[in-house]
Length: 122
Image (cartoon, helix red, strand yellow):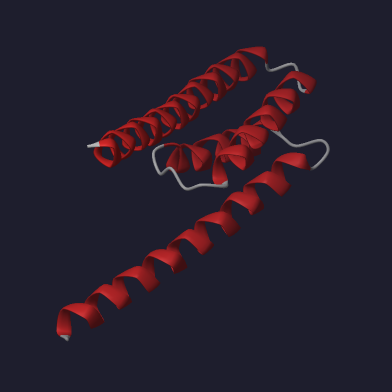
């Protein structure tokens, strides 16, 4: 009974953390969309996005990638091309990571489907 209660509390706390992280990501995204953003603010937004790169939560990947693209264009508008280049590289690395994780999921689904079909045939 105690283990079930602990499991329920653990799952609820995880859902709450995901909701908070999505809200924080949306805040970063809206700040990046503002016109005439100073480069110092953009630096802060990039460092805030770094926290979310390793935590893969479905639905956040598109928000993170779009935020990176907006920040890159804001850097370029302010003629800060080095920061734009570095941020664009970070965007590409994150995109490759997301695509590779999607590929792994698809391969695992195919493998489990093939194993299931083979067991059914036996």
